[in-house]
Image 1 (tube, helix red, strand yellow):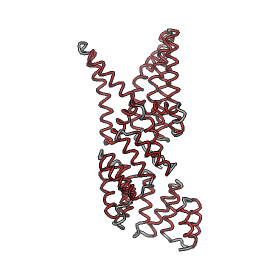
Image 2 (cartoon, rainbow, N blue to C red):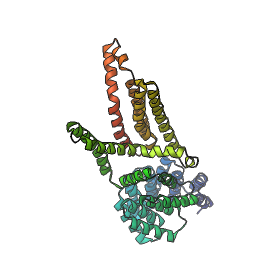
Image 3 (cartoon, one colour):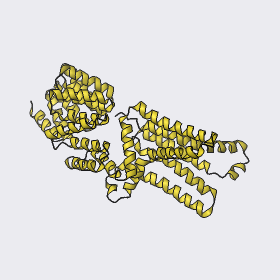
Length: 426
């Protein structure tokens, strides 16, 4: 081992990855075929979010030492961070073929399964790792997370207790305990665990997101919605889509049934109102309660930049709707009423924008919302002005565009649900 490699290992332990890269390059200048050094280069690049370089170095480590696991291990870790999960799984399997008794590799594979929402396989992989090393924290944490998502609260709680016994100062353990408490509808207990997590690791995003949910869950309305969101998260993707489409079809069916059967209408309309209110709250609850935190002098500091932007945008949209409604009551003019309706409905796609990952998915939602805004503005053109146009094709076009706005609002919610599931590969 050269002095440069020794210094690089120390720097990596200190999370000083840029400096470690310099030492590794000096080491490789003397030992160009050192597969371990190339794997360490990959690790440093990965932590610096240099994903292309990290993958290249991992591939080079495999080329230099195809019979050793370290290159495959790093390649799996890089592909996991790049959200290329099937490829990451193959790399982890290749590493396990070389080292079938490495608990960390089973922990890595279990982590890949969690990203694919293959919870039972995640538990199996974690159990395989724990059979080798009962104190492996990666396996314990992944097992607790997967059991929580499978609804096995007792098993998750026992796993967390085992992990705490081995390492009471591990922030991931406390974060897992916090999320398990949220799933159990215990927001106060969850907040305690998230605070402890942030004390141990102030930069952990998982804990910051958790404590925001715990703060919002102080409101009984959001607490109920949060339980619905967490329940939906535990379902397979196909089941989630089935529920979304089922609620939409139920609304259409009940509305049509009430119109065709006036005798039953007094009983059907209240049910339909509850169903529509629930659907609207499921779309608005997350950003709306972020807005409430945004207005709280303590809560605002917990929100991320995207959450603050989303709250500001939703707040502006709702403010325009409220001011327009007040203007209608003051003036009696129909245009402010249309404005209130347009911006009230527009709050639905607006609320989704910052719930969607940055990149092309969010840009798509921005474009969709912008298009709906234009359709809404066209809807506010008074009928007298449309009729008064001396150009019949233009008049017909304006009338057609006005009818597209409500349909666009409905379609935007299905688009938002899809885009919210998209992960941008890195």
